[in-house]
Amino acid sequence: MSELERLRWQLDVSWSLLALHLERVTDEEALWEPASNCWSVRQKPDGTWVADWAVPEPEPIPVLSVGWVMWHIGFWWSHAYTQCFGKSGAVTEKFDWSTAAAATPWPGDVASAVKWLNECRDRWIGALESLSETELDSTERSGWFADGTLSLGHVLAWANIELMKNAAEIGSLRHLRNADRG
Image (cartoon, rainbow, N blue to C red; front, side, top):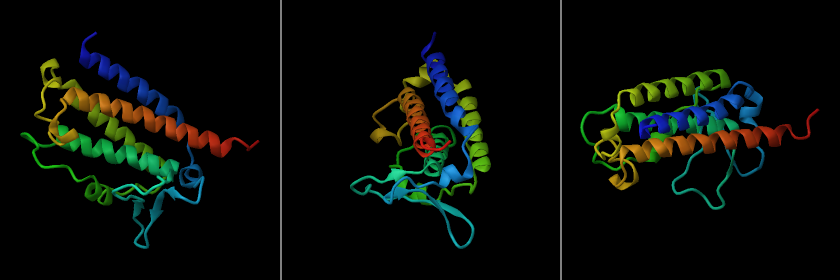
């Protein structure tokens, strides 16, 4: 198995674990806040939805809502795609996660968020299918990530790890919310 095939396999496993929850999560679960110190997604008076966000993160770091984690997946995946595959030439400027977060709305309901996440996945897979093994070792597409010191293969591995972590967070939050329900 090539490195690219292994990364694709890892992505498929991570996605399948997330999909188990995406198929069942409800709007009510997405907006449930398990603690008073919680980052969530919130509707503004104009009807758009924004995610709580601060750089640097507050101490202690807030617990997250399922909706926030869903937003976070779409946020980082959309911007990682744009940085790696949506621009021509090397990216030399430092990526500003705070500005990007403020400009990335949550779709407003679970069905729309799941559609968005599926679109992110499909776009990412399409980009992976166009890569060669040689490109995995290059930093041409990954200059925005980790101060430009890691290869595109590292970015792809990070995306898989991040997706797996987010799947576990959503699963844990859903299990916690439903633990005492009949």
